[in-house]
Image 1 (cartoon, rainbow, N blue to C red):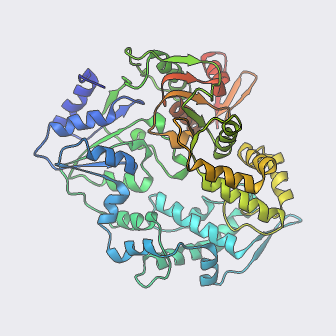
Image 2: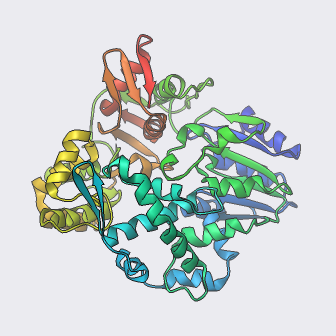
Length: 490
């Protein structure tokens, strides 16, 4: 436990006392929440609002911050300031693709791709309409456009058909949005709907100061609301290298905000050895100029192996590999808990059965494939590792055993957690093992990867407190240490 404020933390508090808005660039485990509490402790007479990325962080903050600071998630704050008739729609039965198909009288459409025909069923069209709504909610635009449909088009739908499909479906996206926002509308909404409507109302947050935690993960919609709060002093705290939700609209405000910066580079979570490995990613792949400093009081160790039997945090890139690791542990009679999208595995299993029977799939990863053969052909052509692993799981275990294993996992008590790097965000473990499904390629002296993948690997590495087993990315770390390796970012 931290007993004394660091010079960096004191500098943050001094900047706050000047009255200006600013941002705090904070590395993993650098005491962000502790620093924000220091700020609130210095201003007991000012009314503050702490905004967290998720409910767990908000609830934790409520136990730490003084009463003059309200702690909430962005969505919970919007919920309390939205008309009840709209939020009451959350209680209605879940909207299904078939409901939308019936409402708008959608018919099957056939499109030509050269000599091939591509078919979209009414329910598949409805799934794209629902996804386009979520896309609109995440981005800062005030009007629905065909780009919202283009943004959710599955990769396996031929690109030459994207524009025609988007043009055709956009009018239905708008009609569905109007239904959601009508007091007489028939459909249930999700939390993104009322949140977007609240943001479009240009709300004023009547607080003396705002504390925005995990600011790197703000969506474009959230970011637009916050930069409009000129009446309040704002402190944005986050780590641009932990921005891993770009795929769902996060804009990395820590880089985009034109504000003065403070830094928290001292990690209290792990020792120097884990900081050294993390700095290799930070400096070589993410262009970070300031080094992270480890905690000299913690004896951390890094191993170039994989040790899932003795790790209590097993971190994977994908749900498919996480499930495979859970099965591997089960086969060795090692009890483990799981924290990944099990519903995704179950839905894939059910959809695979449909596709094998030549029944079209309405939504999910297999939507748009015309047959099981088409799926296997796509995997061979694209090299999609996630789909390949999921198909392998289906073939090896079968639907019933998969369901049984997932149901069994719900009642397991264990200190071993199998999860994905995305789900591990905000967590920490004494012993972490990194799996080998992260997405990068080493071809000769060239390393190919995306910036987002580098950030995700950084998040995974920095979940460890004492022991880090990094065989899954050992070749990547070695390549980044080699000055002769050129990095080509996708």
